[in-house]
Length: 456
Image 1 (cartoon, one colour):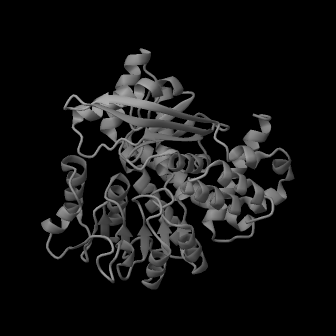
Image 2 (cartoon, rainbow, N blue to C red):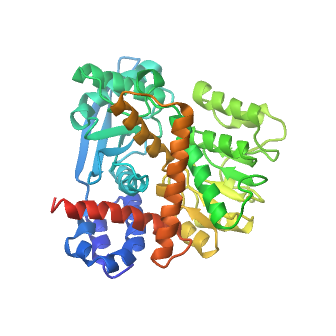
Image 3 (spheres, rainbow, N blue to C red):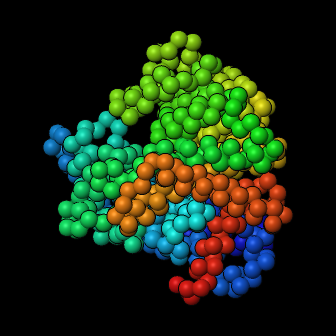
């Protein structure tokens, strides 16, 4: 690590012990922005980085609720308002048993730069709970969401902090959360994004993150001189939730063959590739039935199903042969060093992160070393938060745009994010390195705003 950021990172590790995900996110950014700090001594003097790695506000609260058996349950709730220099705090809510402060700090820290890259005025935040929605009834989820909002409402507002959904928080949960906020505050504010269209939501939001990751990959292909785009390419996608569903949809529409999907139990390998019928099955399986991806292999002939690490050759989706493009869309650190080597060996030329930090640092370094075009999550999956920003705009205007207008605006934003990261990387001496380009571009915008606003 560079001489300027060495002591800063050491302090982060000391102050945030036992939070490896946060350490990883901070290290990646600090490693990348060293060239920018050398050219901007005013940031060093004002200790911008020291301030940037410390959250502006960490909110931790109890969530008590009653299950269907009449038993009282107690969960933890969080909201990390990390940096609001360029606009209202913006970032999702995650309901998952693994949620704790370290994961949320990592996600909120990443969100600062992701939001800055969109060009929209949004700060970085993240929140959620260790509540597990799987296996819960609608009534239990409603009561939990209402209990969660009974505390969260004190800390959010349309011009202060605008949460969205994330893992475990979809349209159903956002509806319950929004209803409780409106009931408590007795006011209609666009305080959450990802709302239903009937009450202020934006068309195109479900598609946004997956579409954005595919468009970012398409721009990386163009930068490599590949004018055919996704046509004829074989694509591996992990996950089977919102991001994976719509990344696979657009990739298919663009002429690619999508051969993998996964969930927490295992993954499918469909050599023939998804088609419209299979895609509709996945949408119903995951969004309505809430079943497991194994059922896909039981439904369609010739599809192989594997649980993780059971097979010597296909331990995960990233060992599948002859892959051109990989879009990891499940969760953090799902692609390890060995899997990165397998992807490169099998011909992968583009990796576009649909999830947040799904590739471990050694995997990222290996991709870059081997000439794979690697789109980091803060750039490649920014489509979701970009469309959330567009929803905020529509709420402020008291208007709702057409699907075509939202998608057109989103496509322009993703192209601009790619071009900004690509040109910034070139400017600072790292051509083709989207990690450096995205981190420096996002950092410069936030740093300049912080410097202008004084010591806060």
